[in-house]
Image (cartoon, rainbow, N blue to C red; front, side, top):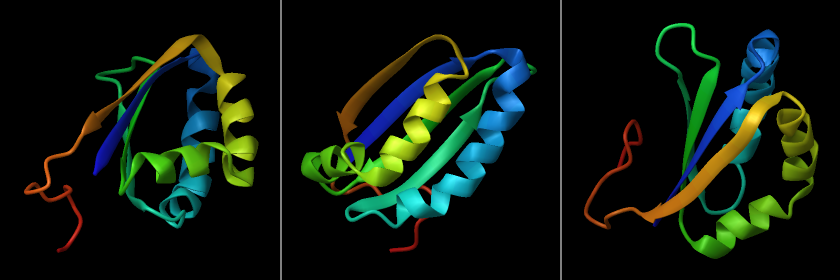
Length: 104
């Protein structure tokens, strides 16, 4: 299992628009093959930082999502709101660990 982490810094005037975009896209992302869950974390206080955590069954599932029509709709809109380049990385999720908030 793979955990994808993407830290994004937004133009303060765009944060609410991103939160709305994410809320509309979350269930669609989670419906992608191999996606177990997507969570959005908000920066502490009023910081215009958002971090997404997404759990994928395999690297190939994440890559398929990144080539999907949905990603092609959501990512360009998201990128247009940034005030700094995003930072993204993937980590292996331990096989014996449950995903927070997901029933076994």
